[in-house]
Each structure stands twice: as structure tokens, then as C-alpha cells.
Length: 104
Image (cartoon, rainbow, N blue to C red; front, side):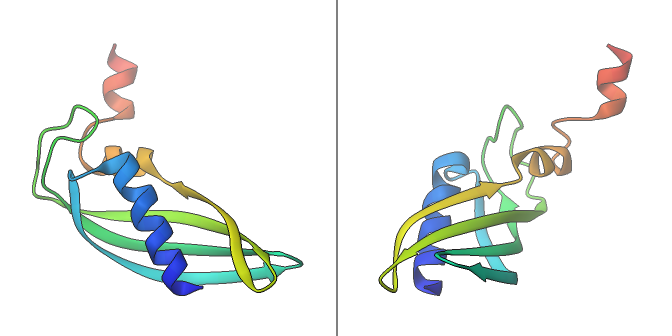
């Protein structure tokens, strides 16, 4: 299951972030299982090396946070869904500031 978790989230990560955020290190923070569902809360860090949501490369190390949920059928992962906190990444890169928005 962990192999699927890392494969699935690297796929999710590449779909949203592409080559902009690299060298990701991911740690499983918690796991909850109930009936045919397993949820994994994870966090980590990565380096901002390319354009990301209109923010130029900064070289900053950013914190990543997310949740992956699996549906398990006959002991195998049948489906999975994931959430990556993109807003948090954008804030860490200076791409969004509440102070900026209030001044507009």
C-alpha cells in the first residue's frame, strides 16, 4: 500500500506542480482505516526551482501538506483521491499575501 501511496501522490504532485517543485521528501504523519477506506495524512518539503502559479523560481524550501484516501477492494487499492495544500505552497513562495489583497 505504501508503494501505491508514494506512486499515487507523486503522480498527483506532478499533475499540479510539474517540474516547478522538486526534491520532495514525504513523511506519513497518520493513518486511519475504516471499512474499505484508508486515509493517510502526510507532510514533507520540496524545493521551488521553476515557475509555479505565476511565481518565479525562488530556490526556497517549502512545506508540503496533504491527505490521500484509498478505497480497498479484496486487499488491493481500487481507487484513490488526494488533496495537496496548494494555497499553503503559494503563500510560502510569496505569491499570495492577505496584506496585499487588503490594500487592493
